[in-house]
Length: 63
Image (cartoon, rainbow, N blue to C red):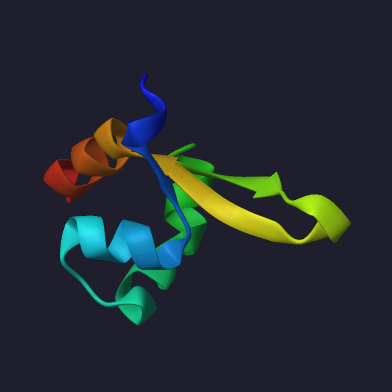
């Protein structure tokens, strides 16, 4: 997968799906369990959520 296919942060994931950040955060548990989202660490230990566009697209279609 191309680096451009990587969505970083809830804001980008929500915008990709056309929903609010609050809506997509409500699905955090199922998305994490299915391996659709994952976390990375930045410097100083701060974590941020990431997802591949294809994974999120497939998840949205299955809903």
